[in-house]
Length: 211
Length: 172
Ligand SMILES: [Zn+2]
Image (cartoon, rainbow over all chains, first blue to last red; front, side):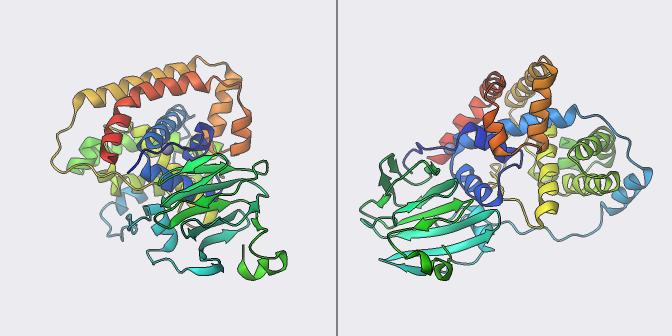
């Protein structure tokens, strides 16, 4: 694996460790941390700060029944939560969002495909498949957008992004990412507002394509 | 915690409970939960600690940091009704011997971190507490550029440098 050169900001890792990131961004940051030892160390360092805050919290007595209930349950059988492991280019958090299934690609035209993992009021997180040499459709951002490369690479005005690299874009960035030659580029993209793919799909069709 | 993990020692678990359960309750109430719900969450978190003890790795985390994460996960899962996205777990290499100096180094770093936090001005400290209690949004945190968070982070980072290098080796 080539070295990862584009990382989430430290404030973003802190917010993620504290559980303050909206769900779509948390999926992307969790995926990056799964691929990036450097950010895992920073993430775990922030957990250490959280641990100190917990340790220093004002102690409030718990009721005796809580203790009894708890100890009565220690031997009870339980079903462990499923653990989603990395599968091919997809890190564990993506597999968890898939609930273990394979991607279900929907064609957007020009060979570009997408699979929406989740979408709600907090924004959306999707996989994008972009053939080599193909532009990710020209788009502008209504809010913050995180794009994590899982396979291949793309380049735009701000640089080259390979596997594990995370691009952070906001309204201010007008960019045209183009998938590099070689393998098709697969990215995990999260946004807290609807992307407007101007070149590819007329605005009227957006509700149909759910972009 | 090691006795709980390796020997399923109930006395050790009782001691851990007596230390952390009241702090957890205080922590959760401060995050905004009513007292009765806080107790439910404390019970869930303590049960998770018991059940997931095998995942605890003292080379990488202090007990408090590990419990903090479990508590925040539980709070967020309840709020969202679905699991909070977490990174893949790192596997401990089977049969690997505990590295006492790494564990001690992490403990010392955590001690220094605690001291650094205690030396902050009250309003700065409160800002950090709020952030890690989940009371600040990402935007609010990024706006807090005046915080001496940098010095604290460099401290933690020193302590975790080794971990980082080890992880980098794993990545290759
Ligand atoms: Zn990184």
